[in-house]
Amino acid sequence: MALPYLIYVRTCPICKEGLCRVRVCTVSHHLVGCVVCDECESVWTDPDMETRSIEKDDTYTASCPECGLSLWDEACHWADIQEVCLLGWYDKVKVART
Amino acid sequence: MPRSQRPSTESMANVLRVLPARWAITIIAVLIAYVLLQPRLNAWFGWQLPSIPAMLGQETPKTKNTPASKQAAPKQADAKKQADATASQSQSSTTEKPKSSSGSFKYGILKSLGRDRYESPAGLVYGPGSEEGHRLQHIERHLQDDPTRPGSHGVFQGTMEQFLIAIDDTYRRARGHAKGTRTRNEEAETIYEAPFDESIGYLGGSSGRGQKNPPLKQMRVVVRGKNLITAFPIP
Image 1: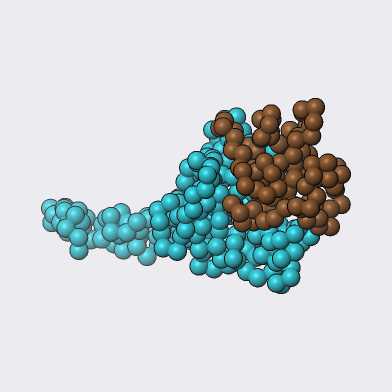
Image 2: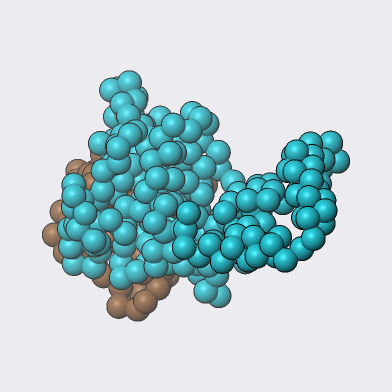
């Protein structure tokens, strides 16, 4: 379900167009969060965006840094405010109304 | 007169020399009548009678432009002109569903590689991926504005076909290090940028709205290997 707001960290430093947004994977028994550019699909493991996660296969699809599942799988979604808080990343993000 | 046309003219003169005078006069009279009547007969009856110069090889016969010749697939060499031409296209941002009306070519230029993957004339591969499910659907977002989106959102003004041609043109020129192009290598991606002579779109998103949607004259293309990730107009 589309959220009435958009949570993002910053403009993507790779493509300089997309928004680096918080995506969560729910496959594991705990919440796995990462930062994904919604334009070029670059992935970082943390909101400081210091460590990139690059998939090893040739699908060129953003994947969960922990389990390797495609971040566009049904088990993944854009984080809501509650999930961002659970990840402890709330002070690292901006929230924009859409 | 070209050297190649002399033999036919000379042979005709030789034929006339050996013929009786009244035969020669008759043939010449018929030829004159043909020359005078040929264009009128073509006009009246829609015939395609060739002119005398055409029969002698001095002029190519006129043929009507068939729709097939007009709809020939664009050559790579023409990509720049076609992409530039998009700047003067209408303001509408038409999003068209993938089609295979030109044989097996999607959007008229993409060759199917199987498994829902398509290759452009310049060698870019469009495959499954992205939040939208396919790269083609992903870049289609840039055919229309998203005014509420934070930051900028490059909007291409034209059809999907024109967008794909402009992307191909950017990729081809940047890889060839053409004047004004830029190439940047990241860990996994290569980012190509190329300028266009005229505006190819405008700046959208909340940032673009704040600047009254200024025109954009450059394109940025992000690839991994030969796989297109995204592409959009930039300032």
